[in-house]
Image (tube, rainbow, N blue to C red; front, side, top):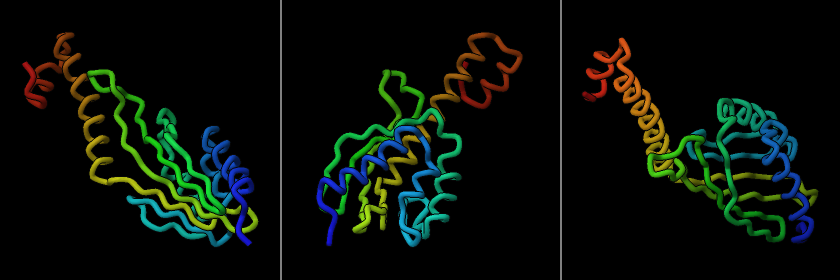
Amino acid sequence: MTLSREETATAYARHQALHEARRWTDLADLFREDGTYEEPFFGLIEGREGIREFLRVSMRGLDEWVFPIQWVVVGEGRVVTQWFNRLPKLRRDGSPFQFTGITNLLYDDDGMIVSQDDTYDRIAAARVLSEAQSSVLERFNGAMIRAGSPMVALAKRMTGYG
């Protein structure tokens, strides 16, 4: 027997509540003991405790990041979502540093997650992360130069400013 759409929506609501509360490691409790989580950078993570450790490590330092969901499709025993991975800094034009991803969740008949597969373009993700880091460094170095910091000569050599 497959979960109905209503039962699947209820199971997903538990997932979403923990996600919104940023209780990353608690998400592991929603997986079956033999559940799997696949992620483009980290690969396949197996088992509830492996997933818990993955979430503990991978989400560390991302306290200011947000992951707004764009849409959700609920089927019988399956949920598919599209979301943004949005960094806390903004571009000079005010737009966010972000990239999109898709999550595919498969539930068993008891409403436990059998598998979660996150998919996103790793090259786009790396580009956004690099741009965000460059932007922060560029602003910092530019501010040092404008302020006449004792480190101005070093900053000019490192960045080509001035």
